[in-house]
Image (tube, rainbow, N blue to C red; front, side):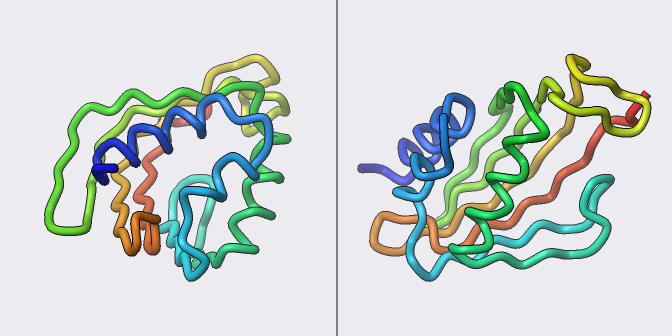
Length: 131
């Protein structure tokens, strides 16, 4: 399968997953995911396979639903870069937002592939103010 298709399928699974197990099939066992500082994550965070699963389960408790709209996509060798608008419907209060409110962010995400799986993922997340 083409790496562009894998990224698109990955995003669809993120939006519709019941558990993180559905996402795990996309990740290489040696995955390294880096989330750069943003409104929710104040320090650069590096996660491996196990840590990603833990973070995803915690994140699932925060959101009722999330959606991604891919605005641009670029491919270079074994890397797919997407620019996306993300929205999440909150399950818990965050800042001045209450459950049911919509949180919006603009993402740039870099996906590097090895053996048809995501081996490195870098997230640059820019959240709209929580008003």
